Image 1 (cartoon, rainbow, N blue to C red):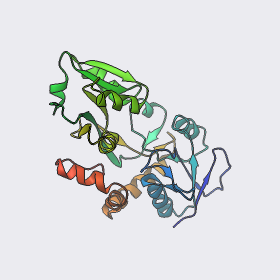
Image 2: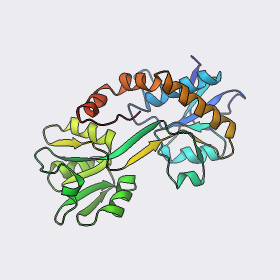
Image 3: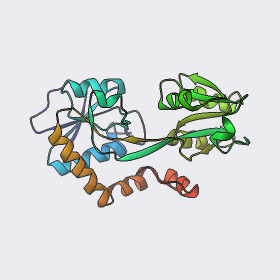
Image 4: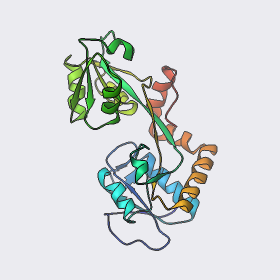
Length: 251
């Protein structure tokens, strides 16, 4: 395994060091463990990537909004931070091949009669979304009859469902599953994806060599069962929930 170093943004890197940016506040993908070390799916993926390239690894813990600016100014080599590849982001940075597919799902009240989006998009219903997310973008483009309630915080949207003020909360499958588990007496998850999105490694637009190397690594890592092992290590409960609903898992 390559050596992993966690530092603040801005420290000069040795010439051969692979500097990967991520915001360590989104478990189980990017977080800091009890001993103060980076941990999670993305951290393990970063370690494997650095090992495959024969380069020492340094992780920069950067707020999510600062990741793309840090990449564009050369402070980091790439981003592995649960980042969705979007047309808007592709205007300023490049992306590797996708390594994970996630969808938008619904959190509804435990006793709700809703089992699909069609039952939700009717007059008199209210759909909660989180401001600035792809869920809000999708809802404003596709919801024609229900009211849309945009809230700043995820917890506020969940509370609206629990209190019966919103009929559903549209958010990513991972968070919907987590909230349904935490509030199992009051809510349930409809995990069938309404829209799918892809996570990929972010790179500078002109770094074609590293992009090629990362794509080769991702292909090999997948063929050798690396993503399967990450799913079992960090997401076994979610994987079982997806299996029970007959859905394709993230990786």
